[in-house]
Length: 322
Ligand SMILES: Nc1nc2c(ncn2[C@@H]2O[C@H](COP(=O)(O)OP(=O)(O)OP(=O)(O)O)[C@@H](O)[C@H]2O)c(=O)[nH]1
Ligand SMILES: [Mg+2]
Ligand SMILES: [Zn+2]
Image 1 (cartoon, protein in one colour):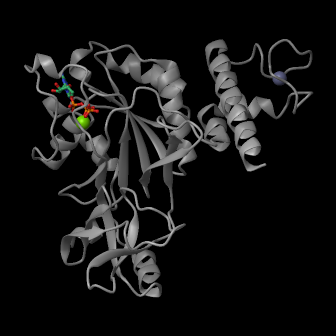
Image 2 (image 1 turned 135 degrees about the vertical axis):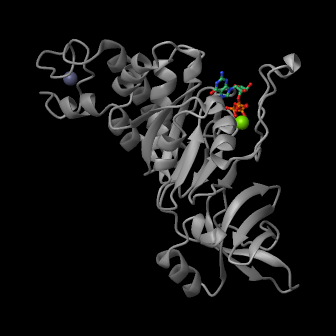
Image 3 (image 1 turned 90 degrees about the horizontal axis):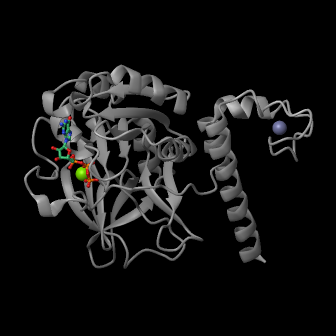
């Protein structure tokens, strides 16, 4: 298997690249106008900004692209091939804008470290963003060695993330790695999202069988609270498939994520259809409401909060367009 095949190069990607008359590559990492790109001939650096026309899609980690020569004979990004999935969040620096994080992930893995209690709102927000991307969602409960009954956490997580695969791991002890590996079987791509320090990079190193990503040093007291991973990076696994490591995010902001919201709160969405006042019902104390009283109160409250957030965003965007 070539490295590009391990990254998931298939006939469709190859045909798309051929059609654009460029060499096929996959973006491993982006930094300041340059991309590290894996190709059939190995990894190369390709410049991205200077030669690209305005309005062209900017490449992000995980993108399949064409590599071409510019007039000065330098390697540049030609086209970003149409994405199958895209993880997007509200840009934390500029709230009225979207920020693309990872392209073409098959599974979004929401990582929670079991050294802490599960934070339902946090987990649900990540699930919304995960489902909205078009990928499948998995919840990865890491650091299971620190819990006596991780199975109970798994039950809790399953209730907070309907439709998601829940996986328990203890990467330092080498446990549960096969279950994560199963998520990338068939050269698929898993994108890890989650707060800082939950063990994303440690899990990737355990699967890669090498220290490919820096992890927080246990003894480095001064490193506390700092983000160890600073760039989104696609890491190949020896058995095929790849994992995207990302810098920790405490609370992700969904962006234009109504479908993601419906999927992440599937049981609420299903009843939502039955509300007598479908459009207007806010599932509080309207008579004839099919939702209130029939679902978990906390989940309903958080669902409504997120719906309000998304509705505000919609208004904002509409205002801007005018
Ligand atoms: N006990 C235990 N500790 C773990 C496990 N996995 C990771 N850790 C520890 O958790 C700390 C954070 O791990 P990282 O892998 O750096 O966390 P991260 O999610 O990549 O963090 P950022 O890069 O900052 O987003 C390190 O000190 C790890 O040794 C585990 O399975 N068990
Ligand atoms: Mg990390
Ligand atoms: Zn209702």
